[in-house]
Image (cartoon, rainbow, N blue to C red; front, side, top):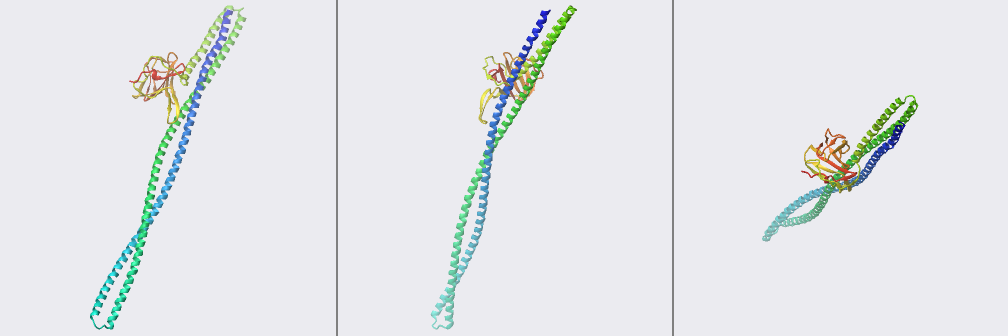
Length: 456
């Protein structure tokens, strides 16, 4: 009987470090998950910093181009004012030219009239002279009349000379004004050409600005996506910290329960020792019942946390950033009947954002709407619920420590819950467009396209 007591005590002492060791291992896995997600957060922060720097550069470039456009617009406005002024001056000169031309025409008409008048006088003078030559006697009236003709002729000649001089001056002014109008016309043409060139430059600057603005919008969208991903990682970290705190609390409760069980066992042994002399048989029965109850308590306190921790570890493993391993098994069914590949597995270089990215999954685009998503291997569901950024997620544990992760699901089948056994080909959900598929084995990633069959 005493030997049975000692065995129970030693079992309790051995059970405590074993249970704590198992729980500690789960905590270690959770800490690894937390560190992995913290590292992802740091990478996202660096990526966000690069994009923010690019956004700042684009913003400065756009602002400088806007300043250049405003400067060009000011030059165009100045040229337009100058063109308007020159056109106004040209119109004024043309009016003046028109007046001078009218004046010149008037002078020419007056000159022609005087010339006709002089011609008439000359004709009359000649006729008068011829008459006088035929007459032998010249009267005083005839002499006076001859002088009058002479005076009229001289006055007409002076007037013609004055008109000719005035006509020459008018013609000279017309020439000057014509040259001035020609110069203004040439200047207006030059300014108009320069204005057209500036307007063309503005169109080119606006086109470049539109392209820069489009690139700026793309970067803003990328930055917004990264912010959402960071929020998702923050949520995961928060959940993992809550899980860690709960696990530590469970470990502490388990420890306290084992210590209390040890204490109860010792008190019980002491009571049995004191009562052994008076009630040996009753003492034996009491001790046996105590052993059974202590075993049940030990089993119930150790099994429940470990199973929950297993689920936690399995879920957390899906977020680890691990190395890549080659798949050597036979190909299995694809999760979709008809699909195309949008994003391949592995590293790629983004030329737009100047970033090197490693894609741990493949993105499949369904060719049919509301497509059925199939489980690719026999296994057990360990995770099935909504996740930040990833929409609805299902994680299935397979043999050989392999996991398949299905993300971006629109619906999860009602029967698919943690602990549910699923066969190969079982419907786990539906997607309207794209499906993310990730496969891991022993903390290493596998290219899903090496595992699944090609699209039909």
